[in-house]
Length: 454
Image (cartoon, rainbow, N blue to C red; front, side, top):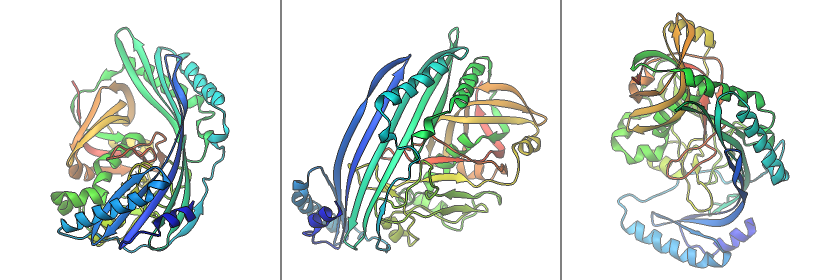
């Protein structure tokens, strides 16, 4: 396929170009109320051509090889039109020429598992969850996604990389009278089907939490010391801070660019935030982005100081900062945009018990249930939590919404746990869907956070 791409691109007269081709296979099963609602496989493929001419950068997607000549003409014409209307010409930051072929390292290849066996696994978890006390419904969704990506550019890079994602997720609904509560469950990763096997104990634990929530008290609104578990601490890191570390967002918001200058002190001295897509087997893992750049670990914040940013080649050139390999496209329909890989707060030195003791009285908040950001302000729903008295867990609470401001919140990080968990659900909806964006971290103690409630 690389040779075919080179032949297609041989007619391109431009300052720079890159051409991607991808095949994508998705197999999925959706089950609700013990019934299979849909299942099957989808296969697609296509090309994305980007052309830079006279400082204008344009993109054309196409699906058939015979459309290549037309796509090239259109891309060059569009680039020339854009160049004539730009105040600043586009240019890519320098990047090494790469020639690589990467096969997905799988313990158990989901493509070798029959659809009937996958359905049996889904039924097994569904029946197990329904057998637990007070569980009224289970909505389950299984999928595996195989992407085989080919990339060339005018500089001589030639890359083929496979990516495989497997996930089994569920919404577990408990009910007592008119009251219902929902807890989410997700098992998955990038190294094979075994990630969804033998997770029964964890599934039962999620059902137990859903049942316990029926007796939980709604949280009382106020400002508290809080410990966030790895799930919701990871969502805070991704949503409130991580998107502000994506250079295309910073570039397009002048006020944010001023606040997010490299070298700015933004958090407490113990706070280190990292994006590391080189972590094998995790959802956010890959080796080369969709601009053919090797991804690298980026220390976004070190000792509370902003020390790095995520870039594609064009934002790196514009801002005069190093490339990082974070230009990712959803699939063959899209051109790449700047995306996070595995983002997390670096673990500290303290046990969970030490965090509880240091907090004394406050709240322990667990797992995210959606949320939104508006500039530097955020609102996150939490799945459940506990009142903490004298360093001990007391009553369970629900109906939790955490609200705050990014900059002030980063300065309330008081203690960081020595544990570390990365989420197995994944996903980010910035512009395009990225199922492999991953988050997590340790438990984190904040000295001052606000919740809405009764």
